[in-house]
Length: 246
Length: 78
Image (cartoon, rainbow over all chains, first blue to last red; front, side):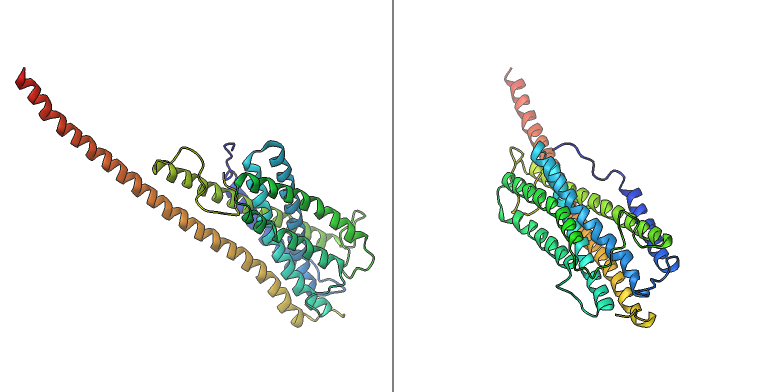
């Protein structure tokens, strides 16, 4: 493993995510106007959509790190891929729950199975929910890392394909407010949304760094314990784990 | 469906934002638990290192103690 310093920039990133999220959410309630069609309940949009977008981007990032691991064999990319998918899963849970609350308020139902956007996101979530059990089921760390990287790459390719397929679908209840032609959001709403999205993206990077730093500290402690115990001649896993072993 | 009035929509919006807050707080709690474990392990390792150093010091003084009568004997026989 290269000598990666995961904790670099953690303090400014933490401050940045707090400032952007608090500022963005303050703008949601104090600056952005109520939606003409949905009213106050549309405020969930500024939380739900950034959560979903950042989660999906995180899954794609996991795939990119998977490719880098397969190309280089450097375990640090396996760790980065694992952590990106782990944090994305947490954000995806948030997107699913907030989306469900919004659906209940807007459509009168917690879930609509006929809606391709909802179902496709659930499929992506369930697909990635298998990632950790897959890792845990493989004992050999070398094989575990390789198979997980292949899974991350395939899943990472599936995410944009899935997105395009949903956009191409005909029957949509979900409004399309973001598009390359400008969409239908007024400027104040768009600015608020972009700040909330930036806040969520910075939060994702910050949580990623926290998780990577924590994992690295654990690995270093384990190595130190082995050295103190006089067992520094080779790699010995302490216990079976889904997390990468460096 | 027509737009919900503010009084009816409010709880849904609050619930959604609370879900996000809860997610972040749960994550922070898990990280705090991990940090506690790391702190405990560092304490154990420091204790182990201290014990090792103590053992080494005791071994060193015992060896020095064993070496001095031997050298005295050697001097007497000469």
